[in-house]
Length: 101
Image 1 (tube, rainbow, N blue to C red):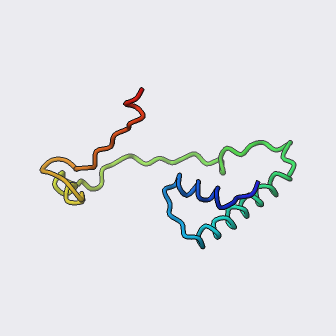
Image 2 (tube, one colour; image 1 turned 135 degrees about the vertical axis):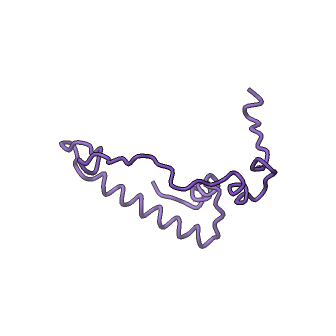
Image 3 (tube, rainbow, N blue to C red; image 1 turned 180 degrees about the vertical axis):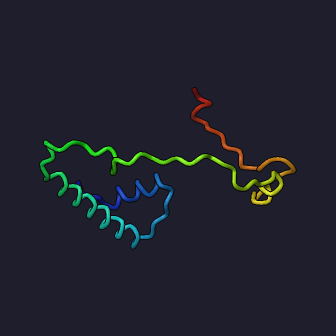
């Protein structure tokens, strides 16, 4: 499989990216190099090898969840681009697909 400009445009659209013509060419080269690398990996016989689930045998050392710094309601609202006295204000999002069902 090779990556062409149409495929890059589709992926860019799905990722909500705007690419210039030069960026598309670099993306095509990079993605084709990645696929070439994957083809090389597929040439290796891995029939007798167990899948790797964890990189090490170490067990996670979890620390106690302790609040280290509290932020007041008013301070949190100061970071919002739009807010009223109590809440963050965000744009209304309507999912038309779910309304049809």
